[in-house]
Image 1 (cartoon, rainbow, N blue to C red):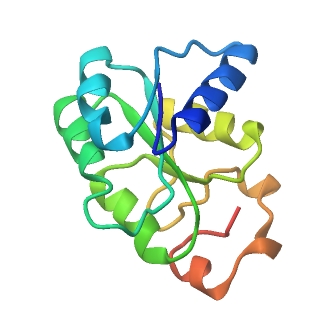
Image 2 (image 1 turned 180 degrees about the vertical axis):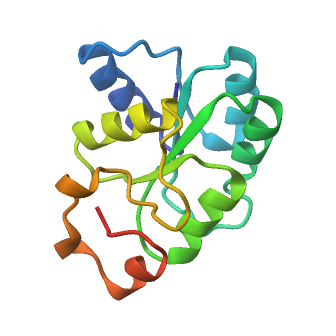
Length: 150
């Protein structure tokens, strides 16, 4: 399942995933009302896109999803403007965090890791394997949050 603040992005990502052989239960927007849909459909993975991860309450739907459907792995797609946004995603119960400018292969890796229960921890929030991780893009801010900036 794909939810995003912007319907066009949710639908585009859902289409790309379908073309790559993934079963997508739904694409929805906005994220504020997504918890009900995710809880009712119970997907294996929910991709939760947000443009403002540091905004108050933006991850409240994730808290509800994790409480009511703990088997659903939520992977957040968003920018890396500050470590607080990344930390807030993990504090809400997200299984992973992927930059929203990542290639589709990076999103797929994060989905597979989250589904397998090997999702990144808050100390290591990079959603791609270290052998393909591009640490040259990291900044002191993202490294302080435990993310390489991939």
